Image (cartoon, rainbow, N blue to C red; front, side, top):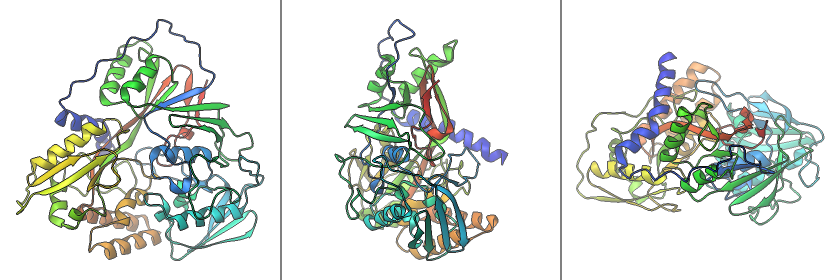
Length: 505
């Protein structure tokens, strides 16, 4: 255990810095202008969070991004929640909209709702809404959502207004965690269409600690819901989340005191600059008055083969991509070492032996342009792939269709099954049956040693298939202005930022 923790710490410190230092020669941009002279500016009426993330999908049945999942965890409720855990800690299910949930048989999961719950529009929340919401998510089956984690569900029964009974088609010890994901969020069946995602311009109706009162392209206003029933009520009457174009604009907003908290969006140069200011200060704050808190291991980079890429069918090309990154790879499994069930599977370091191929393969690599350092990391990956020989890589950000995607994402929950989800949905050709059998055995297992062995086999198979390739793991940072505090409730089950734990004082 000691070596594992030490290794996790090493991964966290080295993850992004090694890749950037190895592959980026662009000089750091100059710092923004010095902050205004007054160290104690007049506070804004609303606590404001700055980020480069954008809320693109307010309907929880269609949530595929980290920003939109944060909105879902803030505005909607689920039967269960999973408090975010630290390295080597096992995640524990806790009730949210449910008073309790029990496993009444190997294939039956029964929940009793809290009494007196209502949606933001005043409509009563009952078991019928829960049934409607989960069946709707399964029916819409939006690609990239957490819906596959609900795959063992056979039917839902509602014997009364407060009881929801889930009947599974096979034993699944992970089903409770699926009920804590955005796909299991509860929506008002009187408002939401059963067959279509709700248009973004229409009112967002949930039952969570905050309601959306204004939803714009660059700014979202949240107001506390006074009738919220659950474990993590809001601390502020009103919160704003502002999306900035890039790291430079976000850092300038900190300098100009336009934000009170910053979550994701600061590039490596900005983080280095601010950290230097903090280390040289007497109060542990940057020149603009912000102090950082690190969340170990919360940022993970992986490379994902699109299931529709023609080149993906060629095992030799997949292996070439995997092995070309070996010398720079810091993360050695698609399940991070900070998650229970991790097992090393990918080679790390050294010089890989790559076999020459008869013809050059051309690939398109895409990444999310809102991700801090996304362009730099994409260029590092391209350099490594092309250095390996026989590969040409074109980089285009924000594509819907590409051969490879550079991912900077969090799993829906801090569980191995959630981290494995992308791979489980689309293993390499020929591995589908074996992977499905291993996962079914893991879901049914009640013996920890057996479970760990099955997870190890899955991770080894993932390394052989090479359709999802780990690259690096690093801490995530939240920067808070003087007087702003946060509590663990600020984070969703997979370290997604929610707003209920942020407040002044």
